[in-house]
View 1 (cartoon, rainbow, N blue to C red):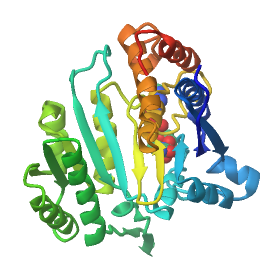
View 2: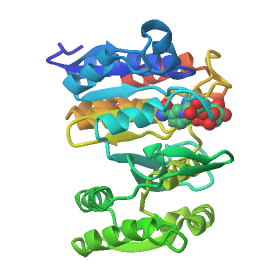
View 3: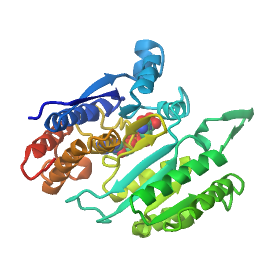
View 4: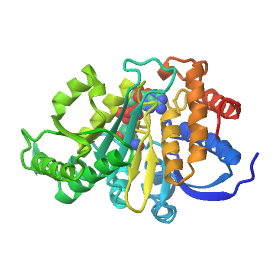
Length: 348
Ligand code: NAI
């Protein structure tokens, strides 16, 4: 085993529901991969949401804000948000606080896993701070509620720039702006105008526009026609779950919330209360989010070791969780990845 040469301080929010189970599986894999590649981690662990409120009286403790501000990188499990009442979403609050304007969600098939669309590889780039998720709602008169959809030139331009920059850097061919500007002529109209202006600076990337409802149909009929989906916040949230189903479901798809100063890596899925505490959750989505994080902190050999181990387990198909057709639990799956990383066929 190689001696650790570099230590990364990372804020860890295990989350609730299945969060602690998937986080603990992921940490064990990262520790092993790090030990083998000369990388160590110092985890700064915090609760958020209802668990934190019980212990500290705060949904997001100040110490958690401070930790993310100092470390600039966080790995986050899902946190339950009460429906139709209660405290504001922890995710949305953190994204606003640290100006994590870009939500990056690669949707890619894993080897060996049978899906409806083998070989699919698309990316959702979702604006992460504006739109109806700004959380500006009020009662106009009893029985009438107004929610404000915020779309700005600044926010739309920077997310479009992010998508096109990514396409240029990674040789992706096409960007589709997804909108509903036929109905929301001013807000989605502004979003589209910004996308068009940015697109002009990237003539090598094909630029197209699709209306969001048509996009849902087009995606199910033929998702291969898309490469990068560039969307506002709400459409991106919905399309992410839809697209996750193309590659095996929510247990698989990773995500990154990116800003200019900080980044928080988390799966697309939520806290899955229906399977929490049952050793049933698939940790792959958070593990692949951690792989994105490792690349982000310039530890690509460690990232590649983890990804190779994960892919080996999927290729063998013997130790998979129930959501992807297997019979194994979260812990057994993590053990299989640990073992696969030791295998001579997996190269760091
Ligand atoms: P969900 O994503 O938690 O679950 C939807 C379905 O997918 C469930 O059947 C669940 O069992 C399954 N699933 C999700 N992740 C899985 C995994 N890793 N392995 C196997 N199966 C998995 O969505 P739901 O039920 O709508 O939301 C539950 C809670 O999570 C809500 O309070 C919601 O606000 C919150 N949430 C939090 C997010 C976050 O913290 N980033 C993101 C999305 C939702």
